[in-house]
Image (cartoon, rainbow, N blue to C red; front, side, top):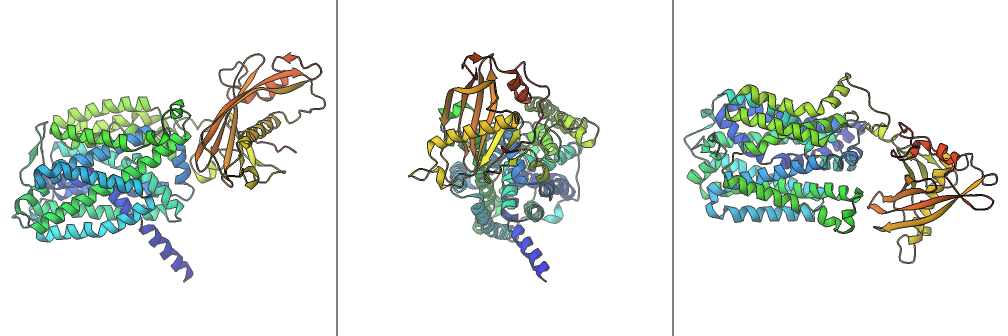
Length: 608
């Protein structure tokens, strides 16, 4: 009985995430394209669009929620390398949402006041995304789902047109539809992986103790239900007057709005505005929250000197992406662009990067070349455009496959036909992530551990009240002391046989410089990183960074070391024993560098 209660509790805790998962994915792409594809290609056409879309969402959660995978650790590892992919996806998602809701929903119904309404909606949604954490947005979306469904039911009951669901054929396919089948499949299966909104949700679901798999399974089912509701509304409204875009091709994106404007009562019109407003707002507030989450993490870990002059909050603000998306939506509306061309990058330009991300999550070594992937993606987009206008089903089908070329090395590795992962390559699972940094707990200080992570020597520690000043934050001199401790452990690990009583040389600190960025407080986990940055014949420069697991980069700097003989203190060239002991960790540009350097060596405690 207790087991059943536990399972039920886990299911309910996970299912509460379903509304925010479904609504954050219910953007202009799914919202208006479900109307278009139902009316032009029939119910089979709708299913060929909706099922891969929902399946892609569910598979994302199924793979990322595997028992040995930790979405938090995976997200931390991929946020920086794939930041451009995530931002491009958010830019397109918001541009599609704003453009679709302005041109295909509110403009046909509201008229001239549509622009002000859309801007007001965007501002309100962004304010919610700024003010509320994701768990608050989750609750908000759960509440918003109620009026959304009520509005959809009210429209189904209230729409009175000559067309009905029986008027939509089972299928009505043409060459363009057949050609779009493969791009739709590829784009929808990879789409959630490039959407940082879904990554943020997977991380928070795991932290909340819920099941990522259950959450996304229920979210995908709810999302499919919302798409079906939209298709039923489209079937009830009828085709109406197709809108011809600048490419000369007709589209049925505005069919529902046309029916509302033509035949809808005041109550149905209000229901339509609620239906569209909730669908748009729950995408835009999620965009704002997730983009800020991503960029705050990226800027916190960044070593760019630009952040010394520009406030990090300004750099990480989602406002810049929002402005770009709003500008793109205005331009698309002005030139009467079809929604298809804003959707097209998800099946062409971004496919290579998304496929690399999936492969890396599944355990492939990172071989992601963003420039190459985007260049191949642009060629894929050109193939798609040519095939779509012609139309040519073969060119349309080839386009997404061409976009996948940039990910072939990683895909081949997973298939067992490529080379094995390079030594030290990150494998993004709980078990292997725990082995990425080899640590040894000190006998003398149980709250510290240390070891190598590539070229960096990492000391982990937890400060206590003993490290604080009268104000309560960490005393400034302790940061320098921690760097000194990390340096001594670095030396001890590389030269365990060094004996101060018999040594022929001493290591002296010539200069020390540290740039303070942020402050820490007691019990805040800290990592101090030290590596060899450069050297000449007589001097070695060590770079160091101090990071907080909570607040990111606390400071960085460097120190210059010199060597003197132990009797007369005369300056010496770098001693041979130093070169040999530190051989694996010299900079790659150094003539002393080992090739290849080991990724991690077991560290020895000071008393070993």
